[in-house]
Length: 433
Image (tube, rainbow, N blue to C red; front, side, top):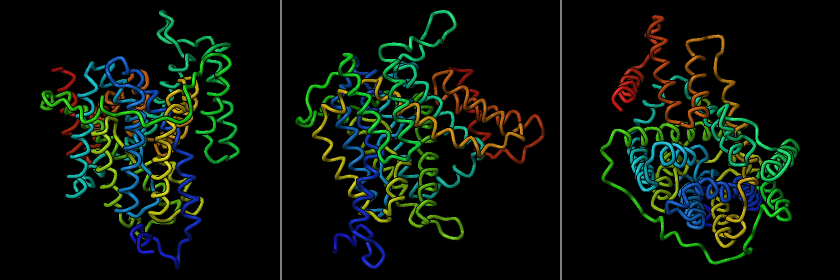
């Protein structure tokens, strides 16, 4: 019972069986990341990031982050490398900007250190309050579009036809057809509120792909793949470059608002918010997130963040660190089933990416489309991310447009000093670089 107290468990208020079931539920709803993250990083396999190593790094980051959340913050929230953040890492920093994955890992590590400092000093509140609410919502929705676009492209549903830039691929056969079948299966389960819909959808789709030669499993159980090729592979000689500043800021920006939004949403569902709107122990939650990011970078994966899927465990009664502790144990067990997760093809993970995009789009409801000074910058942020294939460009152009449009229309009171500084810096970035 003393260990349960460490997890914030109170026998007068909480039930062990309920907390354990809640932890397993959370794992089932977010375990898809064990297949999706290595698949996204598969684009960098030729550059020295083996999918097996990324799988192990993903699981270890989830284990460490979730354990810190359970033992330190004592909350029923689980963590893992975040979707959107991994896409920015792979497709923007490495494949678009042309930097090495070692450079990107260094940026993630620095972002985690900064996040720790901001959390300890409470500066993060000032930064969060300086960014307009519409922009925060637009970033989440834009990332949702970007993630969905990646899923569509990876599955071959959307292709480059050489003429119209993008077009509909052959959806009557191959990976595109398999992805559409998986999309229907997963969507139906989500509508019916089947626990673990994402994970079940990925596995069922992968199994359907076996007779068509799309899915190729090399076993079920194996030793844990080594993370030696990507462990602590940092690149320090570019840390003072302007692009490093942009990359670190973007990682920090996305992580900060994604975490805050998730924690608020899940806390509301669990009735863990005080009457004045504050969240008990939120500083410890953010610290757990920051520590997990630093650990994840060392292991060799992108920013680790609190998962909104934690709401599934909360919905089944999870209220303490015992829930997240159970989730961490589940991730530890999953380490030994690497062949299953690594063998899952892009066609099977694409539906998860597309549907995660759907869920992230809900934040658009918080944008006031009757106020053009708010919705135009938000729209620019959202539309640029998928079309420019860059989360950072979406954020930068969105912030610039917000400041410019509100300044030209005399709405100076809406523009914080932080926004002025960021807009000027981003404009100089486009002019000088």
